[in-house]
Amino acid sequence: MTSQPSRHCTVELQALPSRIGQVRRIVSAQLRYWHLDVLIDQAALGVTELLTNVHRHAEPDKTCTVEIELLFDRLTVSVHDHDPRLPTVRAAEPFDTGGRGLSLIEAVSESWGVRPKGADGKTVWFALPAPCPAPAPDPVSHPGHERKKRPAQVRSAPVG
Image 1: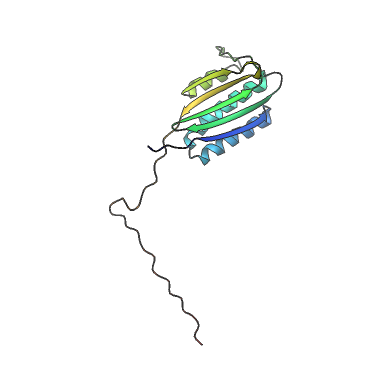
Image 2 (image 1 turned 180 degrees about the horizontal axis):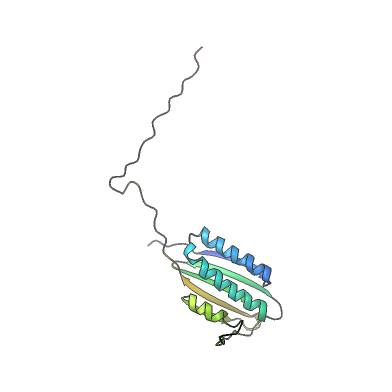
């Protein structure tokens, strides 16, 4: 049985507007490195919404940890903050300028949820289905494809 190793990345930060953009770029770069470009838009949107919620609502401070983990065919993005109050999904009115973050996450993700941590706060997470990486082609096993040998290089030594 072949198994794919898990991949994991953690970033600790203060959820301030300038830091939210930086973390979005870090998540995007990490997904590019893992060859998961197809998930960048969804993951960046989700992490932005979660960090914005920490910035707007978390107390006593804005310190949080962002984690992204790829395990087999699932990417999980989570944000842990120190506020024990759990988020609620509310129906936003058409002219509301906020209140749609968790609804957006629900719309773009495979699943999402909240893990209460008691007095230590909570973790809000969402999951995205990750495409299985295609195995690299083996040039020897494909008919009609032959490996070409390099001609031997001949070097002459000076005579004399």
